[in-house]
Image (cartoon, rainbow, N blue to C red; front, side):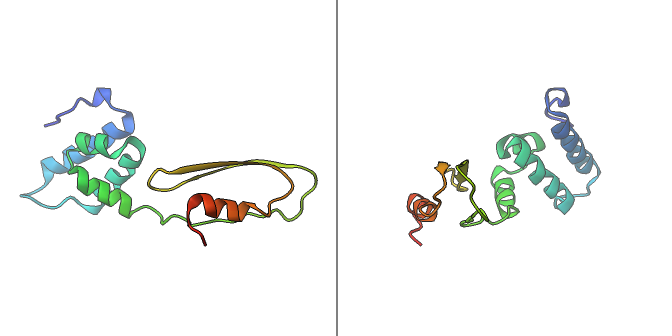
Length: 128
C-alpha cells in the first residue's frame, strides 16, 4: 500500500518509491533490503535529501544517512594548482567547502600566486 501520492513527487523519486513498494509486496517474511535498492536510495538521497528520501521510501533516516556518507568519495585535503606560465594578469575565483559545511571563497587578481598556498592553509587552519 503506497503511503504517499506519487503525483506530487519528482518523477525519479516516484519511480524509486514504486520499486520499493513492489519489493515490499513480493518479499517473504522480514527479508533485508537488497543492495540494489539501498544503492538506489543513496542515489535518491543525494539528489532529494536524506530526510525526504527516507520519509518517502519509509527507511530509517539514520541508516540512510550513514550509507550516504559511507559511499561518498573521501575529500581531497588540498589541491595546489599552478599555471605553466603567466602572461599578464590572472583573475580567478576559488571556492572550497568542507563536508561540515565550512566555506572559503578566494578571489585572485594579478600575477603573483606565491602567497596562495600559505594563505589557504592559514584560512583553512591546517597549518601544514
